[in-house]
Amino acid sequence: MYYNSTFFNILYSINIEFKQRKYRIISKTKIENNSIEQSYIYTHPYNETFQYIITILNSTKIKTSIPINKSNILYITYHNSIENVLNYIIVHLNNIIM
Image 1 (spheres, rainbow, N blue to C red):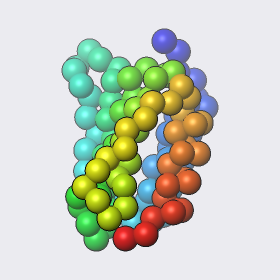
Image 2 (cartoon, rainbow, N blue to C red):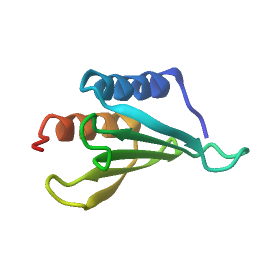
Image 3 (cartoon, one colour):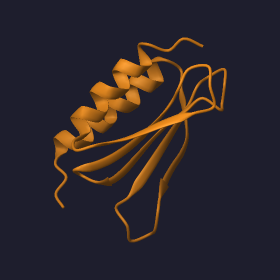
């Protein structure tokens, strides 16, 4: 599996999108020490149960879990590129109604 600088730049952009909205990252975990899988959990500044979770399984399989407004449900979907994740996150962050 090959990660290029564009992948990491977009991952950084995702982080910026959350930071601009005052979300905080509560966990950045590797599944196993020798694994490339990583999870990023971003929590809402006023409601810590409102979490976005991004799990990078590999460069072409990325799982996102997003909270559904006014419920306790996380919607899970898979993306085949980090660019798709960025666009998906932006759409959902711009449509939050708490």
